[in-house]
Image 1 (cartoon, rainbow, N blue to C red):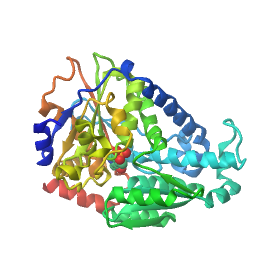
Image 2 (cartoon, rainbow, N blue to C red; image 1 turned 135 degrees about the horizontal axis):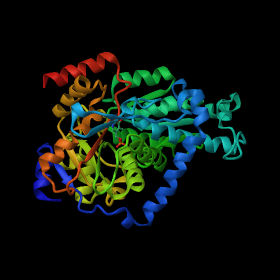
Image 3 (tube, rainbow, N blue to C red; image 1 turned 90 degrees about the horizontal axis):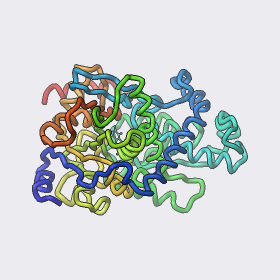
Amino acid sequence: MDFALETALRAGEPVLWANPRRRSVAAFGPEAVAWQVEIAAAAARLDRFGPLLAECFPELAACDGRIESALLPAPRLGEGLLVKADHVLPVAGSVKARGGVHAVLVVAERLAWQAGIIDGLGDDYRRLGSPAARELFAGHTLCVGSTGNLGLSIGIMGRALGFAVTVHMAAAAKEWKKTQLRELGATVVEYAGDYTAACAAARREAQDSPSLHFIDDENSPELFCGYAVAGLRLPAQLAALGIPVSDEHPLSLYLPCGVGGAPGGIALGARLALGDAVHIFFAEPTQAPCMLLGLASGRHADIGVADIGLSGRTVADGLAVGRPSRFVGRLMEPVIDGAYTVADEALLRLVAAAWREGGLRLEPSATAGLAGPEALRCAALPLWAEGPVTHIAWATGGGMVPETEFAALVAAGEAV
Ligand SMILES: *Cc1c(COP(=O)(O)O)cnc(C)c1O
């Protein structure tokens, strides 16, 4: 890895790393094509389950059970800036809703087929909400290692279908998330160690049991594909707003990154759907830049932030990950343009600014994308030719943060 970059990372300074391995979509190779099929299948699955989801969650009744969020113009937060409002994504109030719900539906669909509750893709999927299906699901446990939002998403969807749910959490996870999960009837297991340790424990437990289904945040194609559906849906959303995407009108996406599944899925989906005029940057905390480190060093999951003396501790609890996903980093090599880091104080300031200037209720993790345009300006990279750039900051979560908790974050952000 470049010496200057490593020095800055070690010092916890904000950096921007430009990816020298980015390729045009035409040069992606067979692996990306294989993913394209899987991502399309995930989109179709979410559509199949629409009628059931609309029955489970009243907030989805008006949109045929589609879990989607708006693209909101946010000129007061940046010129040409749009905010992708996943902080108010239905069901779970974070980007985790698409991935987590999809991963649960994969399990539910397989079990229901095996039990003969459904026997064709054209069946009425509302049968998966029947008493017989609930009885079937009650004999199965979904387990997940989570920093918080993934646990919430799996917990909400899993419990809605009648599954037992166990969430393994690092002790540092927010108390309100644990409380909310327990109220849903999920079991929360806390670990003194970090998030990777929580995941490892969950994985071990699920290994030999057919009634235990481990949803592996570090290594799950089902989560990844669920997240990626958001990328596939972008062209229609942009077209509806009359926003062109072309070489003359480039689009730049800023995606907060933890373990990499959510931003990775969205990035691949967006590149496949929109081509080479979309430019993608991952955003990470200065103390937990696991994806940037893995990509820039070429060592991916074989290196962790502790290896370069970083704590992994950050106010952005959704991004407090020390080691990237075992498959996403490598997959991202030709996909993204780069990655940048943001200091905790800047994230808190952005929580306050997003609330004050845009009325947006974002958690610290979700503001990392808002720092993108400025990070690019500071790095002064000759990224694109002339032409007005549309910037999309992906607001990944915050909708379920309790009022008092949010007020404290805003106050902290106004004070720094
Ligand atoms: C999980 C999460 C992310 C990042 O997703 P990963 O799949 O962990 O990279 C970003 N923001 C919020 C609010 C999250 O909960």
